[in-house]
Length: 448
Picture 1 (spheres, one colour):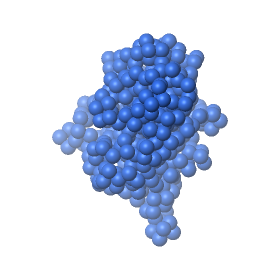
Picture 2 (cartoon, helix red, strand yellow):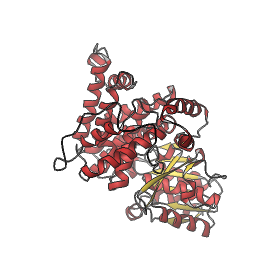
Picture 3 (tube, one colour):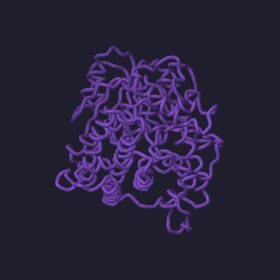
Picture 4 (cartoon, helix red, strand yellow):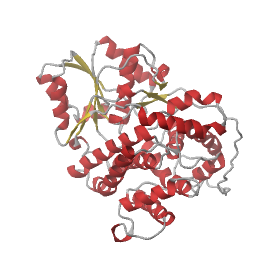
C-alpha cells in the first residue's frame, strides 16, 4: 500500500538507496491501520446489503455500474430493497473497462448534481475503482487526475458500498483505485485507506453468468495477487494467512467455476479467494508480474487478468532462479500448501525442486483454463520500451524478491512473444542495461 509513498520520495534517491527505502516502507505498511469492510457472503447477500444500506439514513445514493450489469438486471436485487425502504437513488451505468478519466468526471458531476451522500458500486474492478474515485473527487472538489498518488485528498469520500460481480480484483477490500488517461494511455493510481468500502456483498448468484474466459482471467488475476503478496518483501503473518487461503481456494475451485459456471459453491469460494487475495496484497503489495502487465494493458489494452495470467509462470521462474532471493523457499511452501508435495507434504525434495513443481503447476492450470502462452498483440519493436517502463514501475513501487534488469525484463517479454514476432534473444542478464540514473518516469501504476 505504500507504493505511492515510495514514488513520492523517488526523485532524490539513487538506485543504491532502493533497498533501504523499501525496507523502511515495509515497516510503515505493517503499522498503518487499514480498515476492512463488513462482508456479507452467500446467495442473496446483495439484497441483504441493500436492506442494510437502507437503514443507514442516506437521502440519495449514486449506483455506479456498467451497461451490461444494467441489461442483465444484476443490480435489481439490491435496488429493490432500496425502493422498498423509500431510499432514492440515481444510476450511473456508463462505466467502461480501465475507468477512463472523462467518464469518471461524468460520474463526479452526477454525484454533485443529484446531491448524493453515498455510493453503491455493482460490477467488476473498473466499476469499483470508478466509484472510489468519484467519491474522493467529489469530497475534495478535485479532478480525478489530481488525486493520483497517495493521500492526495484532504477529505474522505462519502460512504462506499461494493458488490463485486467478478472474482479477481479484490477491489472491494483494497485501498487503491486505478483510472486511465485515454489521451496518454497511462494508468494512474489513486490510493487512500479511506477508499476501502464500508460494506461489501459477495453474492455468487451474480457471477454464475460469467463466460469461461472471463472466469479464467479474473481467477488467475486473484491467484497472481495472492502469490505476489506471499513472495513480497513486505509479507506479514497476517498477509501470509490470507494469501495461503486464497491460493488453496483458487486451486480447488477455479477449474470448477470455469467448467461449471452455475456452480454456486465454486463461485462463492472464488469470491472469497479474491477478497482474501485483496486483503493480502493491499498490505504486502504485488511485484514484477503486475509491473509488466500494467505496461501491456496500457499499450495494447490487454485485460489485466489475462496479462497477469500469461506472465505469472515466466516471472515466477525468474524470481525463483536467484539464490539471493526469497522466492524459491516461499514458492516451495505454496507447493506444499496445495498438495504438490508427495505423501501430503512429506516430500523430501528440496525447495528448488518444489518451487519448480509449483511453477509448472501454475502453467498447467493456465493451460487447463485456456489461457494462451503467448500474448498476441506483443510486438518485438515495443519490447525495449515496455521493459524500461516495467522495470521503473517495479523499482519505484514493489518489494520484489528479485529485481529485474531491463535485459531480464526483455527476455521475459520475449518468452511470451508470438512465434511470428519472435527473434533470437539474449539470456537474462543480472546487471542489465541500466545505470544508476532512473529512466524517464512514467505515471505511477497501481498494485492492482
